[in-house]
Length: 295
Image (tube, rainbow, N blue to C red; front, side, top):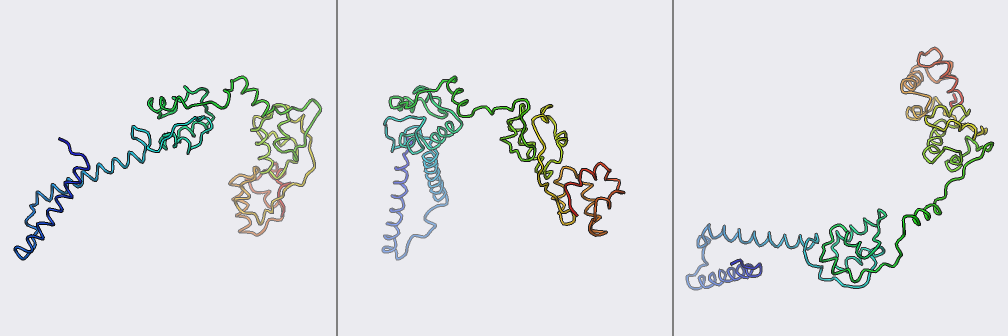
């Protein structure tokens, strides 16, 4: 016959009380308390195993309660009308869901999911059939389900398509942000952001031809841009760090290393002509670098 946990604990407590009582009697009768040898090694081992088993089972029960693996509803559960599409974490717990089930429901909603009918709620990951049947009479939908067609219409109203430029209309190349650049036919968010990032690394465009450095642009993009005079950001080459120099799209690693080595060995550069005999710099390189650096 398997003893319950309460019975086993009672036996341990009773044994301890009997041991203490015998010790008191022995002290007064024989003038001394029983020595440790009166309990055999085997009895000590059995008591230790019994105590370990009680602690282990108690730990399992506490773990089940903390993790929500018990098969019965939480003792504080209540039943009341609720909408699973709007209920918060505390509401799910009041209804008797375990913490991990409440988190699953909130995670499902955070990813755009929603239950369109009371019966849909049984699809909640980890929800048992017993829990669903217990909650089903109290599930109410306070919002009407949205069809795919009306949802697409709402998305269009909330995120209207960007109007495109007509033939002959243009936007400034240097002053336009990503929003303005998306007015160009064939240019979306990704392409607009790519143009702006490249412009920032350059320090500004000095010619529309520089757009040819970027791959996958619409072939007729130049028609919708006009060059606007702007202050070009110029880098002080003799005071710039290696990191600042390598960031410029017109300089590669070897060229930056040559610039830093020249400044360290010979002092400040006076102009790009100081590097004209360096094999790493072609005449074309020096010409396109000229607008972006000062000496």
